[in-house]
Image (cartoon, rainbow, N blue to C red; front, side, top):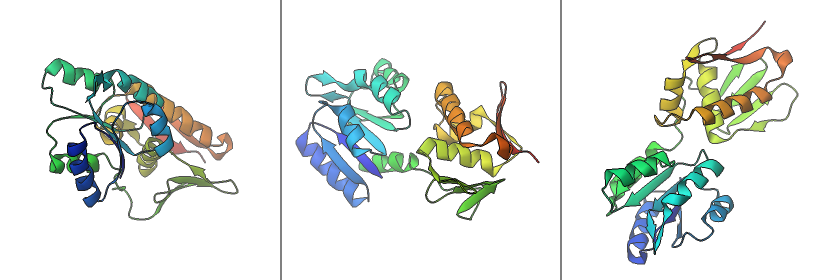
Length: 223
């Protein structure tokens, strides 16, 4: 997994960086919060591991900006603080997990892998077909007859895969949040991803995503 690791304790960060690398993670280290959003845009990590206090600065105020600009980026916050108010604020601001320092490498590796994309349990093939559309499970691309392939971002891909695995069935919002948002409700983000998916389907194809009010969504294809 590609990780951007922000930690200003050079001795500690060197040890964690070495450990994460040995565990197979491609990790880039920063020791400052300066231009963090630009670094995220440049390196396109799959996960951000963020020390809460960098020098004299507190990274908590950046979490809402990171979440707004990169809503699909998992963020693990690390800190020696154990106060419930601080921990709750980090979760409310967009963190996926809060780990208490000193770092435990086994815990970190477990959390990182838990946030990695999971293989589809619904199919052992490399594609899922629905009507004129084919979802490639290895490349995260949506293909349709005679049209260019569309590369899907991570959450959009997992959402479509979940819906395509059970065509004609209603997938509850709770199931979607649990499987794709790690149990954290994010209604606005879910609605945005559904709207994005709907734009990929030609109305003439008969493929539709129906909003079952108060319950969830159903993907189906007409005759």
